[in-house]
Image (cartoon, rainbow, N blue to C red):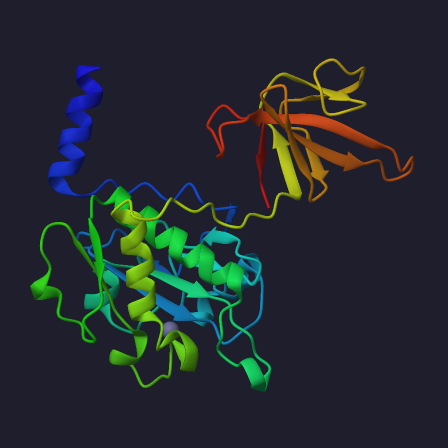
Length: 286
Ligand SMILES: [Zn+2]
């Protein structure tokens, strides 16, 4: 207990609890970054991708060395959040070393058709708000502020600044829509940080490839521990779960559909705590 408290105090003191967000659905880490960053985190820089794509596709686009670009996080059109550069490292996103060494950078998917060009889908916007709240909380910041310029010098100990890519490079990023939403973003995030509004849950896509992390995991006929066991998974086995889940008997149940039989089978993914836990039976790979 004392050790835990000491660690928490030291982390607070140096302001560098650089663990990554638990809101991510997956990660694809690129070598396009500077490790480690050379400044404490006190800034968030949201970008628009100019691409209607998934978080995974955005991460993949940052994998080739020749691209020479990356982001700490990518948020897809469905609101999924993926990690592309760990928070302890500096992503190459805003064309400005000074900003990106202190900023967590976030690439957001946006609509591309001319009528809605640059607009973030609702799910993407919700996840951006959730991620900003999560970042502020983890770095002990009480407010997200937007002043219209990169004036880091005004920041107090408990402030997080919003900056824009276009301030540093010849670009229109964050695009015609997000460019005018920075005050709204700060207001929404601050209403949650102050307790005025409840903490939102980011849109998550449940379905995907999962890996078994326990020695033996029962597969059942229905989503309940009282149902018949029809098979079992072992440590390291993988399974593709449908985009479906149910809470029952204190567990979150996933489902897969047998490729040849077409039968639906059910597996407990982990305890129902409302979030991903370290002791979950299945972890999502992507
Ligand atoms: Zn940008």
